[in-house]
Image 1: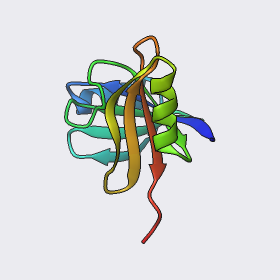
Image 2: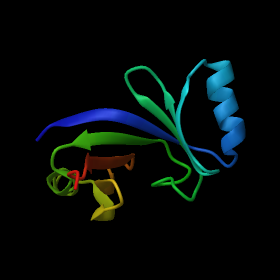
Image 3: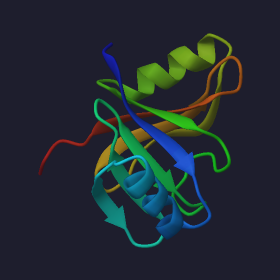
Length: 117
């Protein structure tokens, strides 16, 4: 199984203010924005995502997004090693994903793009 950290998801209650902070203060370019609830910024080798409670997998926590070739196996491995499942693996519009906690309570999201149709 291949796993690669691609995203860090941070919580915000004001997306505009957070985008302004990360773009103006830290110089990160805005890559993508979805309304008033999600934005992705260029953090170099990793995407810094800003999300309100609408789109955040575990609002109030920093969550690491890990691209994997087998979402189901990754989630099962975490659970078997003392972690926990927040949201079982499911398909959304673009990817298969699962939200889990590691064995110390840190949030992780495993995801894999769905095949193009």
